[in-house]
Image 1 (cartoon, helix red, strand yellow):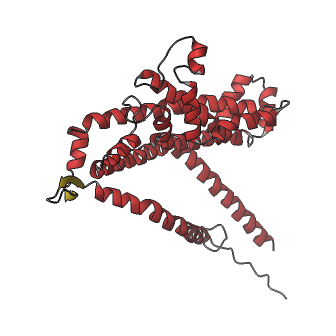
Image 2: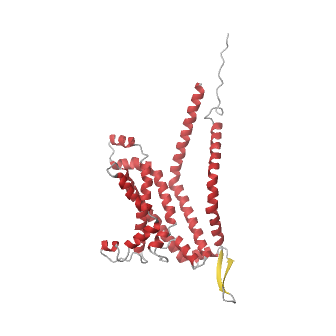
Image 3: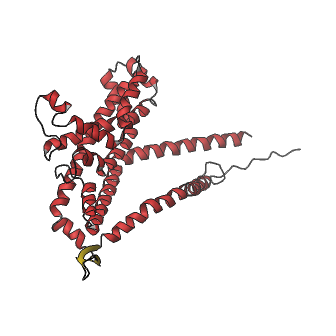
Length: 340
């Protein structure tokens, strides 16, 4: 007579979706990620880390020029500690620094806000099914494909005293002089060039939204505005977060557009990058390095605060979706093992 045998019940640690298996899976993923990211970190350490450390070191020194007994120009570099930073905030360089800081911040928030609105509108137009949609997409992306220096020269001709802008307005405005008009010229030209970049990213997000959501909303009686607020905006939020972050970091380092369009040493449009460039051009490498270091800290701070306040939820949602997908896959494997 055969005695029935009971199959051992697998414990939590023995099942594929148990804690031990999940820990091994997580450890394996972390090792693979570390191996794949190592070349990137090495390249960043070479092209970013070394220049940054060199600039920080240079900001602790100050150069002094003189003439020796033979009439040759000599340069003396001496260690001054944090004196360059003290001059930036409270000394002779304070007015220049805060003016450039205000201009940089103003350009960042103004241009990014306008570009988000225009880029979203462009993406909605390009996403519509209409005749000639491919031509519209190509035409909208042309400004973004033009190099910044070239687009700055184009707008410099437009904003000339005898240019197209004054002819259309019927007024004589000195766009490239020092003043509020110069700020407006920089904002207009930067928006014209980079709003298509926002539109391209948002368009990629729009194409990932299932059409069934809009069909179900239409059946429920939701109008276009309701569909936009309840479906479109939440679904493209991760794309908008990435687009805004990229543009903010780009505008904070703005240099070539105002430099070519308006000119050098125009206080109304002088940014932190331009100020550091001017100091280095005058052979004041210590203050120039201090300005560059402060700009780097400003960019890192803005990126950190932005991701913490606006991007953490999006990143958390994406991570949650990945964890749920892994758990479903592990559960399916567990059921297959149990049936066999």
